[in-house]
Image 1 (spheres, rainbow, N blue to C red):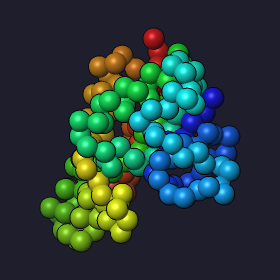
Image 2 (image 1 turned 90 degrees about the vertical axis):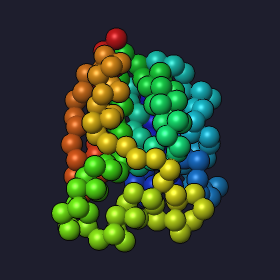
Image 3 (image 1 turned 180 degrees about the vertical axis):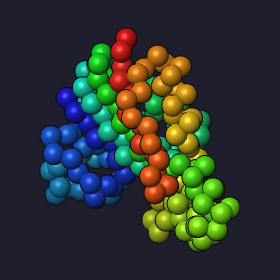
Image 4 (image 1 turned 45 degrees about the horizontal axis):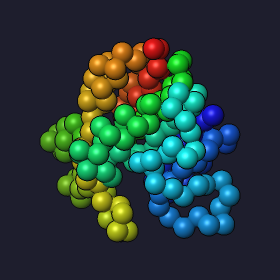
Length: 159
């Protein structure tokens, strides 16, 4: 089973069960609206061969990010992969400090667009932070990169 967890994303991956807790997709059969902090009704522990988490973790409070990561990684099968993308706060700060990013663009990246009640980012994350999370769990990191203020990390469950 392959799962995509996102926040009202325009990027819908073919062949994935798309779980989202925002937006009105009652007529969109490609999306399942649910509480993404509890995906047990859709996937058992150790069942998912792949989970994509697209630009959603920073919309949760800092204390919730570890809970969400633990919940989602428990769903990954042995040799399965989780890929997470989100805003890298360090890259945003570097670009702001060097004058390559305006304060307006910085605020949108770090705090969200805020044009909907749910589009407020509540925490900051970095690629280093997520790398350390997976290293402590003993997972194999397959990809880690930052591009255009977003990090992407893929990790494989090896035990």
